[in-house]
Length: 219
Image (cartoon, rainbow, N blue to C red; front, side, top):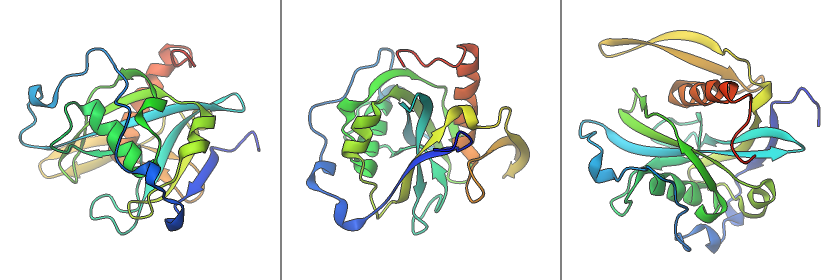
């Protein structure tokens, strides 16, 4: 592995590799103090969703799990994102939404994540979603054991080396309806960029890491 690489590992989606283990969630959800219930969150004007930043170490290098959405998806087609998705009626909390969606997309059981915290909510202006991000640690061996990207929703899943991302990122101005906003862009390689709400979440997370001297709790 080249020390200059940003993408440390990648798993393409393969239809016949999806097994029954990626079906319904079993074993419950890990606990995190202070997570609100969906019923207590007043975002009636926006669609509600949640994502998870799964942090792991590969050869001693801190990385975060990302996905590339299928080009056939109705929203955010082909974009780089964190595992997660929209709230379903059975979800009690944003954390359950994030972990359930991650399991459906990647096959990783919720119990394999050790939850560390919740980041401030973010907005996807183009699709009118409010996003509740969580971060967690997950063992790299567990990722390799379970990960099977859903070929319907995803093109691939991959690990981004955190210390190779440019900080501060490139900054651009965008406009949505009657508002103007600044958004960061992270370049992972010559073909792919992280932008939009995902980049804003990542930027906030990386600034927090810098304040902690690059240490994610327990990693």
